[in-house]
Length: 120
Image 1 (cartoon, rainbow, N blue to C red):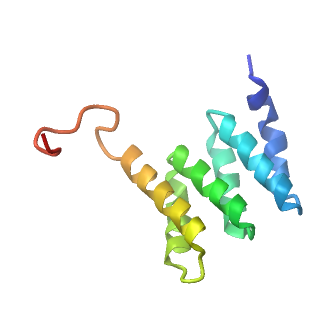
Image 2 (cartoon, rainbow, N blue to C red):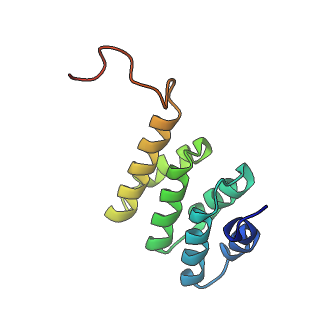
């Protein structure tokens, strides 16, 4: 049985292209609560981040992509970081998202670190 948030996902995806940034921000918050998101939904978030002009919506999208460790978002997040015109808040969210993607996708995630890799 779908939860209310899972049922809201198609509507939230449609709202990612709304002209009002407040609607896009709410859509991203709704998607952040709808778990798990499929690859198509995550790809839609990547596309929305690529064209997003609202700082808060960009931060929400980057955080959502990091939360889901969406590997396909890596090039866009890296380009956001490399852009000297990127504001500090968006750059911070992009950096955290990239770190989460790196950590979640490394071998051995979820288990104890290999012996000798962490200080005692």
